[in-house]
Length: 211
Image 1 (cartoon, rainbow, N blue to C red):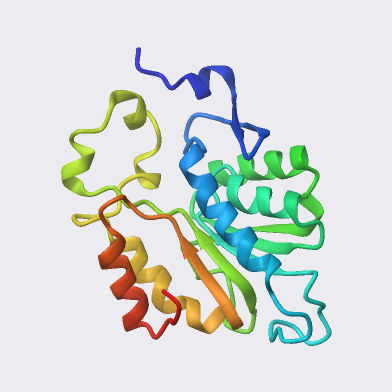
Image 2 (cartoon, rainbow, N blue to C red; image 1 turned 60 degrees about the horizontal axis):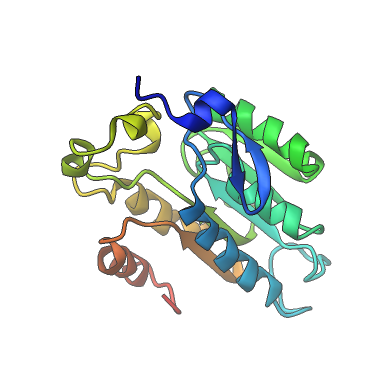
């Protein structure tokens, strides 16, 4: 009937860990492990004593914000890999927040990650600073949506469609990052396979270096 196997089985392997899956929430994909590994690489390179997030916080305790947490695969895996990591995870819908909470408990990281409901930066005051902001936002274009496999269309449209050109979410995420990143912090996002130049230009226009 076109129902994704991960919904039927109720789980998916991600970063060599079993995560719960549930209808109504985007299924974690192995492609997204690239984003997690890129974030891990940068968080592990943070120099001790040169972080401007919170006074007195050591480099071994990075703080991360995830926008659009979904199943919790990204920030949950980061916290599982980095025992000192703390963070905030935001999502607009209650279904992903509930599933992320279950996965955080499954990974043993629930006490270090706070869940907040809202649209992008809405529930995150500008007084909060993070060493990294990570996101796998909806980025499928209107034209691409028409050609998606039926099993993909069984996943929530809210987590797939990124507007006519697929870039709507980046136009919100990129400009708001400056006011919530610590000095030397990183904004890391997953993108569609043809969106590299366009998203990179959004980063450069916002003043980011090392794009």
